[in-house]
Image 1 (cartoon, rainbow, N blue to C red):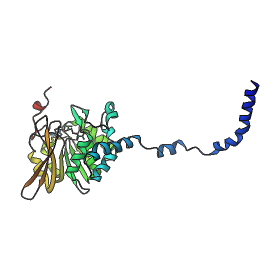
Image 2: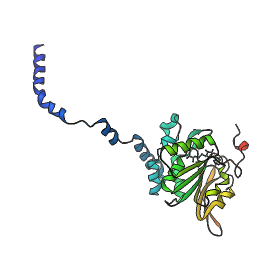
Image 3: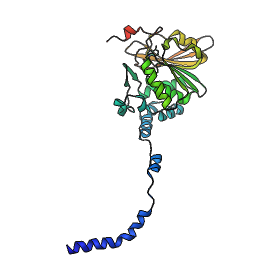
Image 4: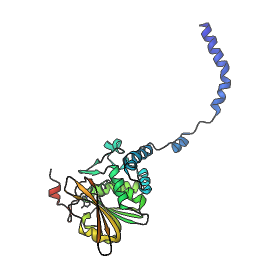
Length: 256
Ligand code: SAH
């Protein structure tokens, strides 16, 4: 007992010197908040590196855009923990947000430049449109399901992506009022390339569209020349169907 209390006494005797440490200012909570890394930033950097760049997407503008756009905000909260994984995810109404690699690959194949005006068909969550919006001057994106269009539009506004405009329309008609477009990206599986989209593409412009049956489609890159269309076929992909006047009939595509 005695020795223990004398030990404590020695400890207290040394304490004044140690207490000098306590006068070093502790960073204020505000300082810590500002300097802390956004934890999702790390997850995004890893996603871009492991799931996109390592598979051949090397356009630095595309990679930078994907490092910036907070993908977890574009998926329902219930699956937000999987937002940076190697998969597509459900976004409600039977639709999906594409796998990160597919977004990167399609955006790279589209060769988007900062002065471009881009049309997207199939806004869904708005994620692909946001990525395009980080690169292009202006993005118009069309979504046939008004609930998805409303959700994407308000999220894009919240995030400050003012150069992305969402409209709830059958995108197989394109959007003639703002045509021609330098680039067109179709984010749903088409049976055939909708004619209005070819018409609304600028000469010298480029379109990417998955074409095929409901199980598998092949990415087609179309280049519009003055007197003809050039065409190349790329990867096989699986998208939800493009439904509309120049696409599939809703009753065929939405069978239970
Ligand atoms: N780009 C989206 C994913 C696309 S999923 C994203 O980043 O989340 C395909 C979307 O195309 C679905 O939301 C579907 O409703 C929509 N779609 C299908 N046919 C369409 C049409 N004719 N016009 C506009 N949108 C269409």
